[in-house]
Image (cartoon, helix red, strand yellow):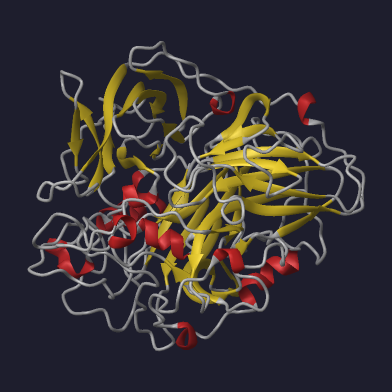
Length: 636
């Protein structure tokens, strides 16, 4: 399996000149029903090799363009972006190889933008970039970057050099190491157009602060982030976070796991199923702890990634756009692709033994909420009867207070679930399927929705039971005693925040044009705020607050607050009593699903001064105003 994982990217790497300047695919859409399922094994991401180990583990990780086999054998390869070590070209892969970190042992990463061709010229984006949003906007220069530009006619997609900045989702780090959306940077290309800004508004400020504090100089086309790894052991993940194009950069492939281990809040090696991949594993090593990122993608018949190139793909609206209206010509309010991938392969199969497995699950979809279940018949009428009931032992930021047995697993975009699945006693030859019963549209809560298409997006992967090769010494999940979890104390303040959306202010019946975070006025009405409005959330370092999130929209929004781990307090519908969080939400979290027409309360302790963000993790929403800066003020 390790060999399969490495070959998934390296075996198809092309010279930059051969893979360069492909642009968006021009072929016809590929019918997902015609894609062969369960024709290739699940890739198990190997460990990212460091530059060196020591008191601080150091990495150089670049972003490059290459071709990789996402579709079944015999299908065209796909041009993607991915992270990898320039010293080990075979490591470039989508999703990235996993960073393994230890609690309280720092990791320093030099993140390099290498989106250039063999001649050092910048590469255009693989997907259509809407330049009318409030986005990084390199063509605006120093005065117009990180803005919503004006146009005298409707522009086409931006085709210039691509900015990136990487965020460690779930990390607890200082502002200069966070991956702030306005701290992006272009590649060190030879042909950056004259007048373009080469970096975002906060890049220089954070560079100076980082170099003064860490002593490592940044270079052209890169940034050096230092992660203290002060949290509890958990499955974190890293991904691009550039202002206004996060949805596109992640869709192109910029995501990977960051597994934090060790410390008093961890469990012994023989307690949970293992091992997971480690550096230097010999070929053929069997793994019983496996990270799996689930994503939806669409394809063209030439193997290229497909993504909407017009607003018309969402609602049929074909204009007028700029300057005659306030509707962006390319951005779609939501996008739900038609093909499911696990670890970068469409509908893979995982050979398993009749024993316990630990799966570190990540919903890496742009906007799709997953409802996962293990069944014997992937085409059974929904809701289907579960064949195996996993035990969830952890969430976003660490272990739960106690294991929770579930017949289905609801996991919103950016959320993680640490689960144990027990295949013990199943005869060799048994086949089971991981299916998705979530909707093929935005999740609105409850159960009154049509489930995903059982022939396509309703299937995720297959488990094929093989003979047992070694005894299972892990503890049955129902017998586990998980590390103690310390609840936060009393809150100093409660903030009332809002989620809202708005239709066109110029064209009746056209919308939504954007989604917003904001506050509430005295009458309890939402006050929508844009990304560049003055900061309204400014807790004092060292204090604990409750954030009361009022969702006034018809959609469920996964809300992520950077650089804190919070606790879900409760949820409440208008006129009803508050209800406790779900059993699987009672550990530390960094992302919470705010259900429509409800109040969701979370409690967080803000322990370091700095400038961070909170946002919706429906990526299309995040990229068009549903993100806000917040400021943790230094204690006096």
